[in-house]
Length: 196
Length: 196
Image (tube, rainbow over all chains, first blue to last red; front, side, top):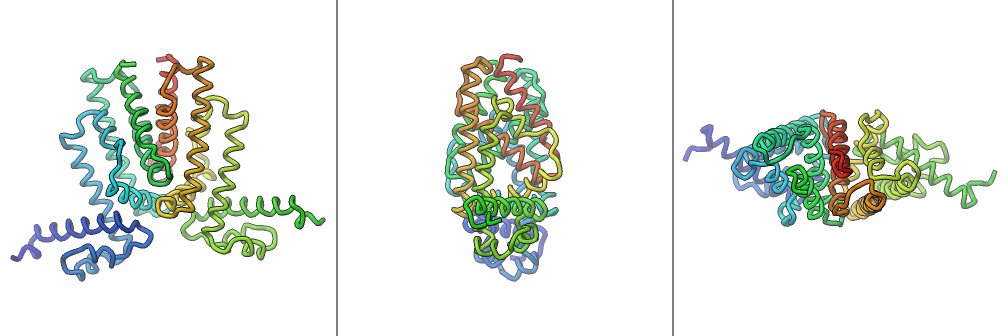
């Protein structure tokens, strides 16, 4: 099999590296993460990994870019066709352990964006993807009569801030704020459907 | 003057160290912060600083505890007597440079809480202070007829998640999401007053 030298092989290798990075982040967080940790998760030639990424930051920036593409695919899929479905997917009432472990690493990478321009660029793209998706869903919901007329930008930013804030609070405190935050977001949307 | 050996003197010294830490965080962030940076901001004997705090983490945990007390004083003051005033104070339409610099450092400390139990304890206290304050304000507003009957916990968690999420997005992206998030939060409260 000569797949490793074809374009498909390169994509396969990148995909395998990114999935190994996901597992290493989920299990170790970012602070103690080394390229060696990721190599331990990676089944193919470890020299490939060192060849592609000189530093941990290079690899994590590439990982964030890959993650945005994966999120974009999810947001374009059948599971997220209304504002309500978006909120349900982003503020789960229960967070499983795998997701919890990855969220902690995600918050740590996000905080890097407060001082590092390469991280900041990725999180700006990430924020715009979510915001534009939400604006599109709200507009469709209003047009279809599922929501009453609203200030689309203001509602999108309140919902996206609620989602990001709930994730931040979940990852950095001992209290599980997801169920009540979700309840509050559901009630907000219900009031915008004229149900209360 | 023998103030440094009295209790008042100790409080003065602690206050001076904490204010020096605030300035060092605002100007340097946390990544490159050293006790020497803070000593540079500190006008009294530098040996005192090294005597009190062995590591940067010791100092930052103490700083977070001090900051919570300062926030508690602010929240109990005359500027925050309604839910609307709380939201106005926490989601400013314009963020000045000083506050922006400190917020970046604050997000970085908060991300530490995703993996470090001592930081996590501080941010759990911080979250509870804000949440309990909001719950109290919402209850007062409902009682006084300024808000209609709501699920108090759910509204408090949506508002606090919105506040924390707006701060996170502000600190980690190139887009200024504060004005539209504030507009959305104001509209949410207006709808709960029956104004729209």
